Image (tube, rainbow, N blue to C red; front, top):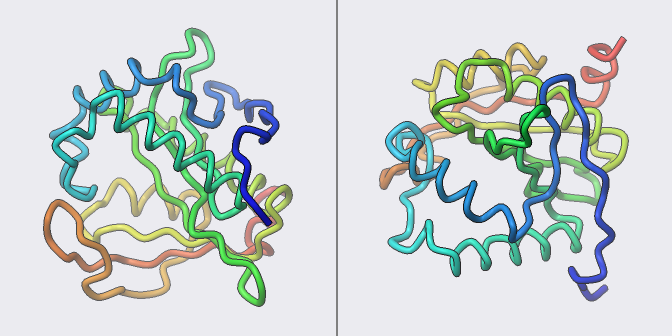
Length: 196
């Protein structure tokens, strides 16, 4: 099947109590670049090295095009988080690396701008994304990985019901170095128990 991102129908935002999730758009560039620049030191220990042109408009355009292609192909569902009262950009969350066939699983990744960290926004975003992944995307298993020293991320995942499965040695190149990661998972049945 050919992916035609320009034919993708705009899905309505996922609405939460304090925030909503919607796919990134080109019009988000200024808010995204400002928040990422403001949060660079805060995010750097947990992300791959940023390209020299990472915050430029052309790089963002390429990023959004890539997001659209992945969404059209069904391999990822990227979202930005926006605060309800003022539509202020807070961060991003992606259901990516979706594998079909016998696996039916995907990987969750996320980032939050420094001014909004520790306020429960990402927890609410996960509460919206998890049922979406199991019911709309029809996955069986969700995974997330984080660096063992990232205590905030560990607490977030455990609060959302993810279970620690083990250590992935030298798993991802983060901040310029190959780093171990803890693997967490949430199975469809776990998610159903949480929704009751």
